[in-house]
Amino acid sequence: MTTFVLVPGFWLGAWAWQDVTTALSDAGHDVHPLTLTGVGERAHLATPEVDLDTHTDDVVRLIEEHDLHNVVLVGHSGGGMPVTQAADRIPERIAQVVYVDSGPLPDGMSQFDTNEPAEQERLRTLIGDGHLIPPPPWDPAADPVNLAGLDEEALATLRSRATPHPLGAATQPVRRKRHAKVRNALVACVIPLDQVREMIAQGHPFFTEFQDGEVRGLSTGHWPMLSEPAALASLLADLA
Image (cartoon, rainbow, N blue to C red):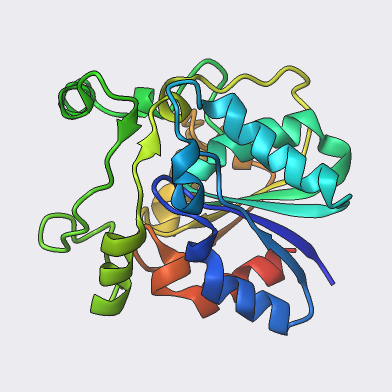
């Protein structure tokens, strides 16, 4: 049996992991999907003060309150940032971090920094004086690569259940104080596996920490927990 903690990316709650959770649980694993502060059923807790440290606290609190050990900590997309910081804070409880279409950003870089300047400006204009990043329209015609593999039911679920994401979680930089060595693995979806391996070999800053880790490919869009939940669950169990 493996203990999994599943952290979703932007705009999603624990609900997004439902099919993956069921598949892993049916296989005998202990699974803890997490909703971060200010998102999903916890959207009412969103304030300007919610940031990356808040979400890191969410991950650490769940692990410590359930007294979990040898955890396989899974971070999807933007969920990769709080799991990176959480693993650095409590490495003695973490067996492995698995990044799903994500990765450990270099210290001092925020998720917002990964956007091109024009996209940053667009988002700033969209957000205005607010403190929440609205979810995308989930339109396959406008975003065919990221939304690949999602059927109409999944898209309808995303449109109805996705909630705005706290801006501070995207703009606060990743900071690791202990720089603890925790085993990493990557499940690459949108970027082809051959390209990922080439980027690792070239020392791309988003992928340098996978040089000694396992890298697997899952040919689908950016939300594999909804487009390929059985395949993703199988990969996570295999990596563990």
